[in-house]
Image (cartoon, rainbow, N blue to C red):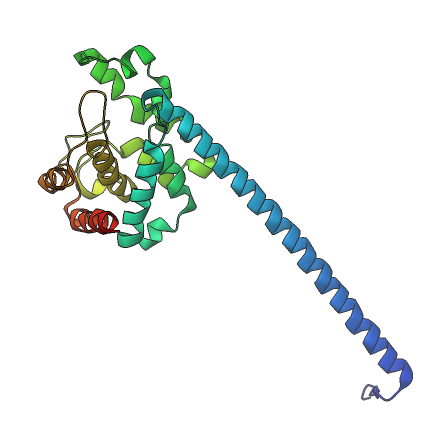
Length: 235
């Protein structure tokens, strides 16, 4: 037996259909409102997290950089290189946090060594070189920093030719995020005044970066990096 066909011209059927449609609209409105609240809460949480990371970075930097601006400068430069050469990497939100916190491990280095005005002894240099491993140990316990941020913190002093530290990684065994950051970090160190030397002129710094192609730095990244700093200088 065929089911009875409900005719919409029936006033009762029409009223039920309208009520059902209104109920669906109300459920949809409630879901959208709930989703919007969740998104706002997530955005507020992410903003608070980013602010905390930035504040921690500035506090760390001011131990040996009284302006506290090194981390911000080098982060902007490294992000620019990542956007030019590695879009997928640049899309990682965690990447910026890794750049900002690259020297996190220095929290474990005594001020007497970190701020020593004269040359370091061999033992003191060895202690300074533990800071990438110390930083990695800290962020390994933080899930939101255990990916590319950890790569930067752990490996930003590795060199393309394998003579860096702490693991002596070479070539593409060095995480890409750390290879990108190494160029920006070296450039910022060369082009800003330090207590023991004045900043290098632009062309001299370019020459130093070019000389490190294939030894200190990933050779594939050097030309895009030099193009980036040249464009920024012109701007």
